[in-house]
Length: 138
Image (cartoon, rainbow, N blue to C red; front, side, top):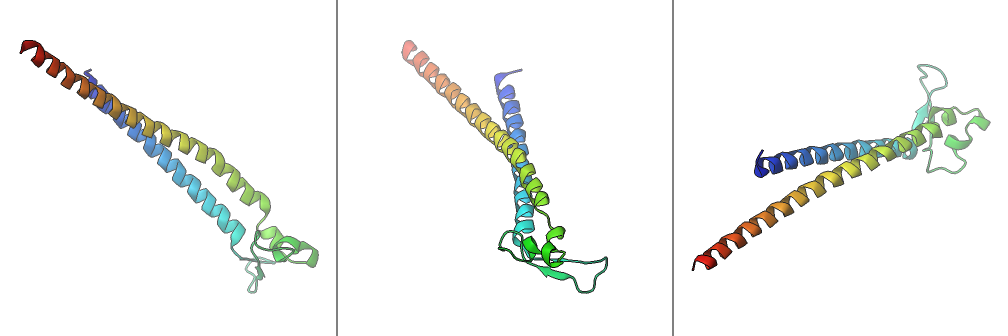
């Protein structure tokens, strides 16, 4: 295999690696958005299936001693509807996905840049060799 074909194949693999990184970072962003929705938006809790008048609940994060946190003491169903472990599990899952996504993205980007640098160095060497050959014959 000639160096040019190898370099193009190398750049293609680096592009695929970078694309996987972007995909994983997008997935991590979706997980972060899901966690934000679970923690920041108000919601409703049903006392029984097909409840016509569900309880209105405040968000889990932006409340202090409100329906979301102290609802069980008052016979409210809000605290059981959106529990902290679910939101923290989503957040915890996003961390390794983010780390792997950043690693793949950076590896792909760095590989492409190094390949471009090597190509530029080969081109400069070819130009210098051509100039040296011309000056030696002149």
